Length: 408
Ligand SMILES: Cc1cc2nc3c(=O)[nH]c(=O)nc-3n(C[C@H](O)[C@H](O)[C@H](O)COP(=O)(O)OP(=O)(O)OC[C@H]3O[C@@H](n4cnc5c(N)ncnc54)[C@H](O)[C@@H]3O)c2cc1C
Image (cartoon, rainbow, N blue to C red):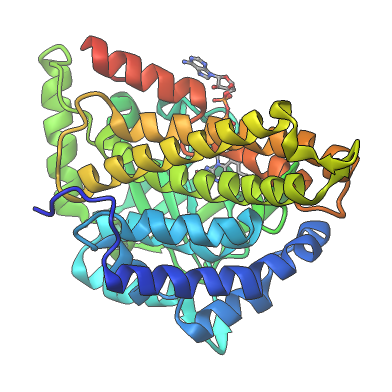
């Protein structure tokens, strides 16, 4: 087990500086354009692929970094550049983690390379869980997966919504109901391979922020996938369902919720994205406050402005500390006895919303225009309190964890 440290080692510092260079030189200058276009920034993803940032290798290296700091450090730097473009770059990784966590070695080897494509022909992947009537409440999911034993195929029917890269992905990972009696314990994940008939993109959403990231509905109409596309395989699924049925028969004995544990481990990564956006807005505001003069002196000479910046700096630092601690806990298998993963996501995302709003205030009229980036950063920051569990859901998880009440 790695000791918890706030000190990046030399190798990590080198990676951080390299990512920062890419974020400053490639991502940030492209941010305003792709925000206006509201389209996937394919040329930037391709650039990231060429230098090795958009690849499974890079993602896996950070993911398996024993210090736990690899992923949060990478997320913070990329999202410091721009949240919408960065989400277009890391969105595939989020789908890939679903396969890494639940897939067999063969599934990992077959599908993850197809999620990324290659630098001359980049592809993206999508993770489709949310539905129109199943957002925070995943147990009300309706998309069905029915096994056709004669053909060893699964048939998927339903509508997914809010899918990042939905419909434009080469590979879709789809969560569906295999046993409606078991609620969220009766779900399973499936790979939908490229060009599978029956999968189509529904509405593409016009969003408030992260507009360079594609978000859309995904319609599944009699989609047939081979048995080998069930993540983890049929045998494992049958065993898991049998255990869940047995527990249900005994009157729903309380068990550790595996899905909740996974979320605790993945939420700090979203917290790190929020830290990146918050830090970016804070830096712009600090710079502006030092140079903008009113009443014959820089506006930072007013305590009312300087103290706001002090609070912003403190909150960004506190958010990073919480995110790094939770990431270290996740990688080193520490139990989240106080839902520290959810805590870090809650605090960092609320911080990003607050700090970006303060940055607009400090820039005055300029802050309110698209000539300066803080207006975009504030729009972008609003997503962090919504996806990967809203702030209310984080509070629900934290309160149930600290009080010992069951997580449903
Ligand atoms: C840009 C974007 C990208 C996304 N990407 C993906 C993706 O790639 N894949 C995917 O599967 N999903 C994705 N999502 C979906 C996202 O995870 C959901 O939007 C989120 O889980 C909230 O669900 P909902 O929108 O249905 O809100 P609802 O669940 O309907 O919530 C509405 C409001 O009610 C509150 N609320 C609900 N239940 C409770 C409760 N028990 N106690 C207190 N308050 C409560 C919520 O906090 C919220 O304020 C994305 C969403 C967006 C906006």
